[in-house]
Length: 220
Image (cartoon, rainbow, N blue to C red):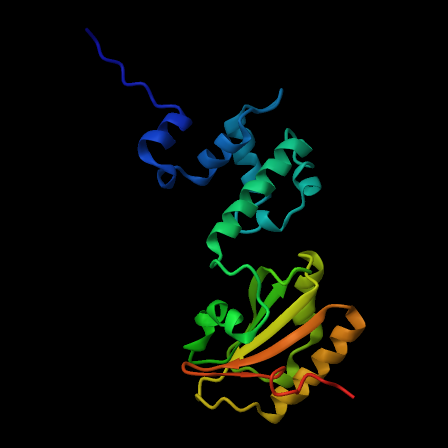
C-alpha cells in the first residue's frame, strides 16, 4: 500500500511542533481563521504582513488594519488584542511604576552602557507602564534634546505621564549643569503639553539619582 505523507494543517503543526516552529505568516493565518471572498486566509496573512510589518503592526489602530482588503474591524481587533496580550506577558510583573525603585528594573539595558542613552518610560493614568523606548543615544549632548523627542510617543500611545532616565557611563551619579537645564526645559514643556514628567533618573551600574527625590523638578 502506498503511503501518502499529508502536510499537517497549521493548527496540527502548532500542536505537534509548538508555536515557535511556525513562521509569522503561519501564526497570523491561525489568528485570522478565515480569508475573504477574494483572498484565501494564507494569502490574506501574507498580504497583511507586507503592508503592516511585524515590527510596526503593534503601533496600528484597528481602523488602520481594517483598511486592508479582507480585514474587517472584527479581525483587526482580534490582532490588536493578541499583540497586547503578548506585550503584557513580556513585561516584568510590576503593576505600577510610582517610585524610582519600581522603575529601575526597566532601565537595566542602559545601566551598563559605555555611551550615554536616554530612555523614556510611558505610563497611563493608573501609573502602569505601557511603553519603554530609548529616544536618544551615543555621544549625547543634552542641550540638543528636544521636548518632541520625549513627548511625541506619549500622544500616540496614549500616555499621561513620563519617567525620563539616562545613564552616566563614568559612574558619577550627580547631575551635570546640562542635565539640570534639560530637565527644566522638559518640565516646562510637560506643563504646556499636559503630559506629566514624573521624574528624571540618572543611573549607573551601582546607583541612581532621582530629580524628584532631590526636589529638582519644581520650576519657578
